[in-house]
Length: 329
Image (cartoon, rainbow, N blue to C red):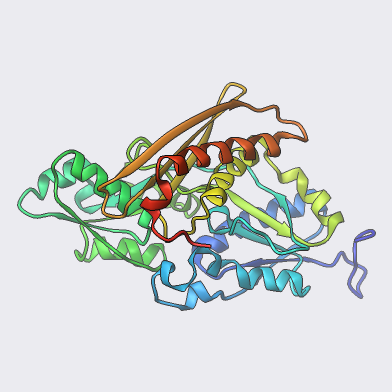
């Protein structure tokens, strides 16, 4: 960067921040843009980029998983059309193209899943109220389906999981219009959109462990000097936690078509990582936990990744690969 690039009027050239066009992506990117402007002293403009995942109506598992929301933004970075990009970290493939830097992982929002149900009901009350028929609950996530079906089976309850796609408005609209009894969404997204009041229940991670990286954002760039400035936005405890979760995911060689969940939480100076692998029908759910001390220094990521790999190895030893079927590569 070598000082601040300036336009012909002598003003600092705006940094171009690439973002998806959805309301949630724009809200997240706007939040990061304000923070970036503070730490760099430069204005930031949002550059809207349409990804294949935004235009396709097919199920994510059929079109290549979460990476379909990321590749167009990464291409724009590598081609120099934008200076930085913001992603929902759970959408980020575990392997990054050469040349890209994960410059910052800001402090995580609420990682839990949230239920938005008819009549303001929580999950238990929803199922009880609809005792005459199975509750119809929408989600596009095999991970959520697996854990929801396992919960229902454990309590002898029938419910129907319905595969859905679409933005937050579309998904909640299914409930408002009576097509579904409830939908499952990430609490972080609803919080960032200012729609937390529509949540009828935050699901305990004991019932519904989130996706690796859920609730966290990733800021990517190419320029090393810009990356050094953006490091001011990094939250080390969050980065270590998501590194552990993503190392588990990478070691399992699983994508979004496999029901895999992971959440790392801090207990003092120790990181507690829980992982879940199951079958979509919920018939089998394999849960394991690993804990290890992590020092938040330059070796923190290596320590966290080792914890994730170790837990994944234990899950694989207990048959996780068979549960996932053919592992996404």
